[in-house]
Image (cartoon, rainbow, N blue to C red; front, side):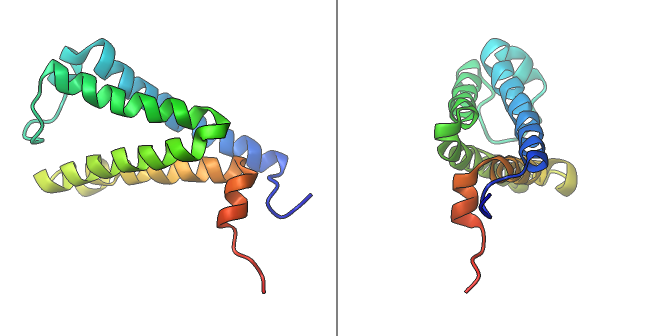
Length: 135
């Protein structure tokens, strides 16, 4: 076993972390695509985005596509990069309107950490790129 090969516990932990993030993101994207009126109703006021059905569809697709890429192991890193960008936009939006720090602004950061930690724990290829080397 090489340094970059996850053991069974790490693999399970990575799958659990990734699974939790995937479930949340699929729920969020699905709500925006299937019931945009409900998503609009429960969106915080003053986000700066037009609260319209078309906007919800667009946001839902912009989240669904990278999430599906993240699910498939061959494209998981690309999906994670794209989801990180989406979450950065959510963080910036909440920061701009003065949302509470720990519950709203940093929620995207929490998801991002879980997303990358889950991928790192289960992906030997990512471990190879990110694991520090000894001289």
